[in-house]
Length: 482
Ligand code: BYC
Ligand code: FE
Ligand code: FE
Image (cartoon, rainbow, N blue to C red; front, side, top):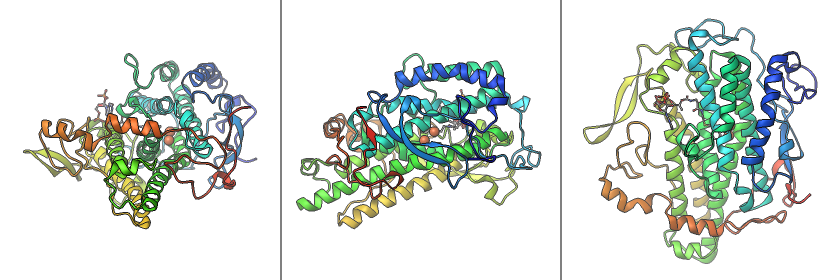
């Protein structure tokens, strides 16, 4: 591999940012590395640290051939620092500084704001690894187990990506923040992760698929917005991370899709035409569609909270400063300053949910969330196609944005998944029909029997259409005992 897109593997930390010549940063990263490995051993995939996993590793940032596949033990994965190539003449494309050359160093006046954005982004990455650390033990196949571990090592790399920015551009407080990223723990009482959804449990594989479909997709939207940043190193970092993110959402969407498919096949084979007859459906060793809907309700609502308040001065400040843009900012045809524009925001007014025009600058979280919802709806439509094709009468749907929210306009509102506002008591009475109940959790937990024979799949999930890296169906994606 040669040329500017290639990655230097001669330093302990593979990179395409010239670390070998950047002694100070190299030393800071090497100082952080042992703590990272300790964290990975403690909080990474439990029980599989010595297994050989067929993983892709980034060896270039060329979109046409950036990854190579090989068996690796996860603690020996080459986590590297990879930035998309610098674009000559790139400008700040929005906000008060629109038209100025993009910043290669941190603008002093925005230092605190920028650091906070990078720290929040960085905090989510290890959190997800912590949330998923028990799942290897109940993987429905070696194919799925490998995908879980692929996602995990890449989220580890995303942490490295943010730690690089902190250590290279923020000096001593950047180093302190980098250490804090290894200290906080998902779900911890005294040092929780920063954002709500990253302190929730991921108890089973259906939750894992929902998480990678809906929560990693928030990751995609936020990374897209940060990829627009006028701070060029952040933009380049996020652009490369997005290349990896696509696989995470693929794992989630196809994981749910395969679960839905298996359920429908089993129902049709058994002659069950009422999808809500959950006892008969569950007796087939598959997850009934109403329970899948409840999982969607939960994970979509938790993920919506990650967009922050619909109306946010933080978001306006990030934008004005040129630090965080809109989804596909440069493809939008307007003045990219937004000082005179409005945007319709869903609000709770006089007991009803209504769209109200708000200044476009403070409505940026809402706007990004709308783009997110459009994206999520496509996944749900593909699941509905699977159901339809099987000949089952049932439709999955995204719940209303007011349903089960903890952040923003609707945090004190009790609404049904169809957006009907109800009393607290009425909501409580319906709760177990709207969100996964303890009994649903027990049923799913009982289904989660591990399958580790190559080419075989658990009762509740259909095999994938294609293998990873064009491997045959019975490929041994994980060699558990070595
Ligand atoms: N939980 O003005 P507000 C990913 C805080 S996922 C807890 O409403 P703002 C990944 C907020 O921090 C992408 N706190 O919202 C996925 C603020 O606190 P301060 C991660 C919350 O600031 C899967 C206060 O409430 N990246 O990559 O406009 C696997 C008022 O905030 C929450 C980013 O999020 C919450 N849900 O927007 C692995 C990008 N929401 O300042 C990885 C960087 C808000 O008053 N972050 N708060 O103490 C941001 O752009 C913004 O911080 C947010 C919030 C969009 C998160
Ligand atoms: Fe990530
Ligand atoms: Fe991800």
